[in-house]
Length: 121
Image 1 (cartoon, rainbow, N blue to C red):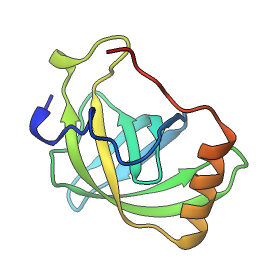
Image 2: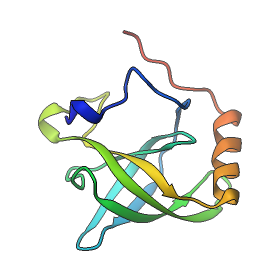
Image 3: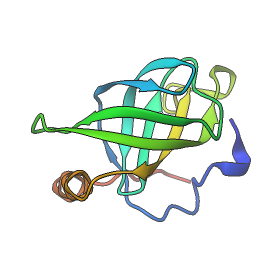
Image 4: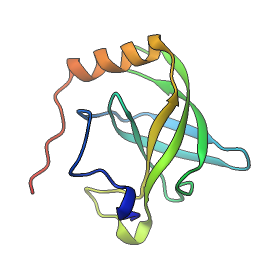
């Protein structure tokens, strides 16, 4: 895992579980994965081959009500397969770069309607 950029102990936003398929598109590549959790600041996408840190990606976010939102984000940290475990899959943390007000409001409503994730230290 790229620990230098992993904000595990300094989270600015509450996270909640979200499990939907996503297809990430970068300038040169295409990645598929499954969201693991979401916050008002971004999303974690579980994928066996995460895009490198700093990669700009575009994808469509689908929330519980089926609403679809186009999103642009940046990979801010990765966890490769060697560092993964059943509770911490390989993948990447993506920070929102471009998200509409409607999408951010939908994410916020989704988060507040669900329980947040808590991890034992």
